[in-house]
Image (cartoon, rainbow, N blue to C red; front, side, top):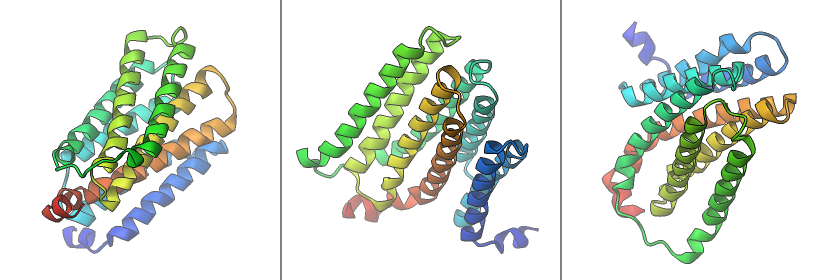
Amino acid sequence: MTNRIRSFKPSQVLLTGMLCCLLFIVGTSYGLGLGSYIQPFFYLFFYFYYYTALKRHNIVFAIFLLTAYIGEVFLIIDVHKYFVEIIVMFILAASAMLYTFLPILKLKSRKITKEMIVEPGIGLIFCVYTVIYLMTMYYELVPNKFLFISGSILLLFFTMVCFLIPLRNRHPSNVYLYLIGGGLLVEAILSFVYTYSLSIPIIAVGTKIAICVHKTCVTLYFVSIDEVCSDESREGY
């Protein structure tokens, strides 16, 4: 059985996981009733991709995928009803990612110029404005205001870290962090807009696309972390 598992190519596993993402989006968007059955498979295939690519397990990555999956199941079912569960799972998933970022943040930073800060700075200002605006808009509607504020602050902090690392270290794989931070932000924003403001199908579809983009980029980044933290990366970037 072990030899059979190792015979799979990582690229094949990754493509299968991405196909499951596509089927999940289509299955839930057109009311086919298949999305909820397909959803766990792309999480499993993404972990399987990690294992086949690096030939080892990763408990932190497993915790991230499990908590993200549970939170997103509740998110798709009913954000308001399962608000507490969603925020708690988000905190656990974000904590797993931030723990993974620690070795990368310890790498020696390259020299950061004013010109390098302009574009990420504009993006970060937009993110901060958007989150604060949504906090004020939905504050009275959410069932647990303390968790809402805590989760929003953590979301902002997580996004800031995702924008900071590529500035400090220009390893090519760090580009995924822009999509990781942006994908999570879009997922959170659209889910609240859909629940409390504008319940139209296109917003629900956008939320599911953000979920899949976010998980795909996290998986690719987890696989490349060793390379980012290597001695070559320390000296060459």
